[in-house]
Amino acid sequence: MGKNKTPLIRPLRDYGATLYVFPSASEDIGMNINSTANGVALSHYALLNFTKGNFSIQDTTEMIKSLQNYAMNFETVLINEPSYNYQEAKTVSESVFWKWILKNKASGSEGFNLGQIKNDSPIYRESKFGTDETNRFVQCFGSIDAGNTLSTEFGMFNETYVNIPTSYGNGPVFFRKVTNNPNINESTQYPTDDAIASAGLGYDITYA
Image 1 (tube, rainbow, N blue to C red):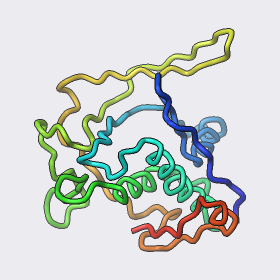
Image 2: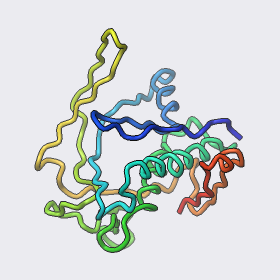
Image 3: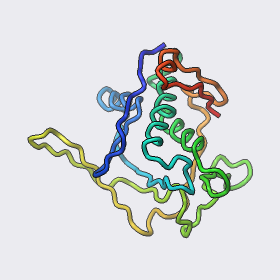
Image 4: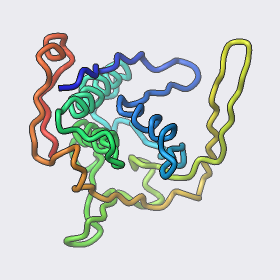
C-alpha cells in the first residue's frame, strides 16, 4: 500500500485564477523529465458550466470540499493500490473527475446527462448538445494557444493563454468511455485507508 496522502486544497480565490492539480500529476512531470519518447504539455482546455441547472453543489466552499474529499481522495486511494502501475500512459485523473461530476450532477432532465450518439456506440454527448443550449455543462472545448515563463523578484510563474471565442468550439463535445485502463476497474469498490477515513476525508468509493 502506498503512502500518498490526499492533498488539502484552499478555497477559490475571490480575485484571479485558482489552480488545482490532481495527485497523479507528479507522474506526468516524471514522464517529461525521464522519457525521450513521451512528453506532457498543456494542449487543450474545456470550459465547464457549474451553474444550478447542471451541478447539485452551489456553495463554492462545499464544492471544493467535495472535490478534495471525493475526487482527490478517490485518486489517492487508486494510486495507493499495490497493483497501481506508474508506467501506464492512461491517467486515472480524468476518469475520477468525471465520476465526481456525474455523482454531483443536478437531478432531472436539466442536469448533466450523457447519451450515446447511436445504439452500441462508444461515443457519447450531452443530451442538450445544441449550440443554442446556454445551460450545457461543457460550453467550449479548444486548444491552448501559448504559454510563457515569467521571472520576477517574487519568483517564477508559468502563464497559459487560451482563446475563448463566441462561435469556434461551441459545437457538441463528444465523450469516449475508457474501459481498458488497468489502474481503475469498473464496478470495483475501493475502500479508503482507516487513517484517512478517521480524519473525515474518506469514503468507500465504487467506480461504475
